Length: 207
Length: 81
Image (cartoon, rainbow over all chains, first blue to last red; front, side):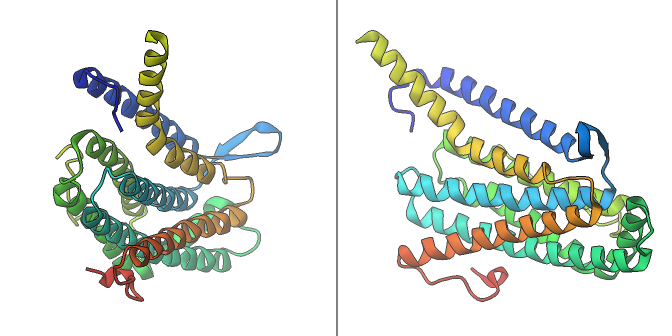
């Protein structure tokens, strides 16, 4: 992938700049998910339940994009077939865990809509949905933990056979996915849907 | 020749840096722009977007596994090893 580049130290600096730009872009997009776009171009704050679901959709899409990258890197010979298989199976596990989160959040949202009634404000529906989501607290916590564990196993072992420069880029994408999963967990905790006492496993994206 | 080589190097560098990341960024942007004025519509569209992406991930992993001679994922991919 880096054919024609003689000075790898320059490339490494450029790669870090590229990843920093991507991280800033991601941060801006995540800030943007905190608002709803109203007719006429105005914005209003999104409810916390909308934010959780936006983070969840973004996580699913980032994971999907990650799988695309792994498949493309394997096809171009950058990643060995065996390594690609291990990584992709973890991506499928992340997707399966995220489907459980989505199903629980959607059920809670529907419950909240029914409980709050047709004249409720979005904030009231959001609060009612959060109350309903407490019924799924254990499953939500478990699913987020599964995603965190899968990302940790990728960073701590499965990505290691990948050549360094590509591993940095994949790790940067993983850090974005990890960040989104922590945003979901943090918002669930703010809403007291899940306990604050459960420790979060730290991920070392540059391992 | 020097100019062509420089362009080639720059194109290689840009391709190496941007291709893997930009697609993910665009997909994330698409999800975040789904937040419109209607709460119920937002919830449904975000859930649909998440499910579509997750189903797509599982489908493409399964397709890759079978195309490369591996067993497909189990019915519950969480049980995959």
